[in-house]
Image (cartoon, rainbow, N blue to C red; front, side, top):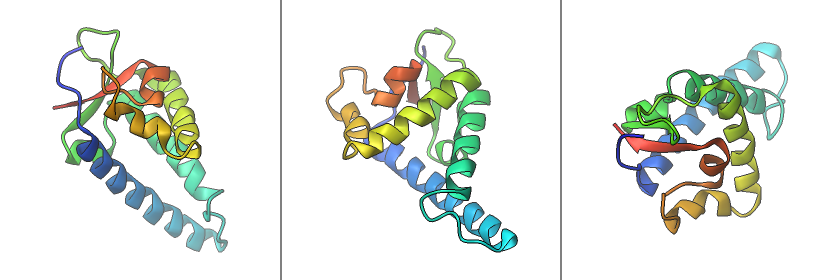
Length: 130
């Protein structure tokens, strides 16, 4: 793996950008469908799952990651390749669990030697600065 681990605030800002984008798209979908199913379930969850799995699996970068100079890479690969769709999906599911436990899974990177969150550890990934 090449590159320095992205810091907490950079990752936070990228997640904020992605959250806003997913929220806007989910709101548009809700309005087009004529329902309001994205309030914690429905469109927002599905869009989030597809967005993060596709983007991290294919390129290693969401739009927020790209804007903040971050790329999620495979820690087992010296070349720093993307983690693939299966591991990106696992990473998304564990990130939901990380939120449910009072954000502990996200905050874990603050004292972890490798600066990984729980979902990074589960997927064998690490967001690096590019």
